[in-house]
Length: 167
Image (cartoon, rainbow, N blue to C red; front, side, top):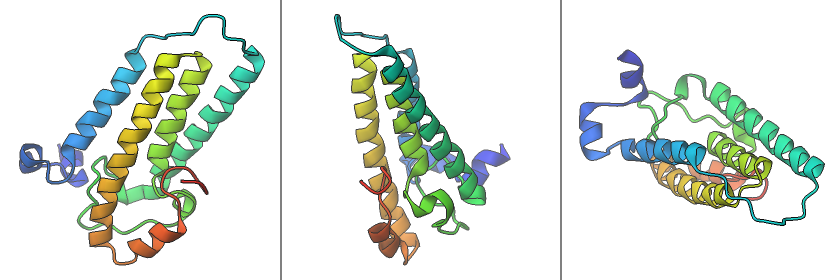
């Protein structure tokens, strides 16, 4: 399929993880695992359901904006692989001017929103695991981006990694 080769997937890559193919598989497994994870609600947890739903909705909306804008702003640079496209360019505009990995940020916020919506301790723990995984994946990806784009080091100093203005 042409779209997979356009994204950088190859038989050789699947054999030796040269472009981060195994990161993509692990991420897919984590996301599917998160969705099918049973809800564990602590008993007798005093919560205001309206406030809980409001926070979940705000986080969900922020997640949707980051995901959608991150994907749209990447345009032709889009690839699920952490390795940059061979003929790609560094994107530093749009949502990428406030966070370096908005798609990962959106996934983390979506997971957190889900955990809060369902008041699920198991999903809160899974969201933390997803955060740690995506942070590690982003760090690995940034090694390749730094090698490919000389101005990435400056961009990295100016824009936060996963949480706009914080981290």
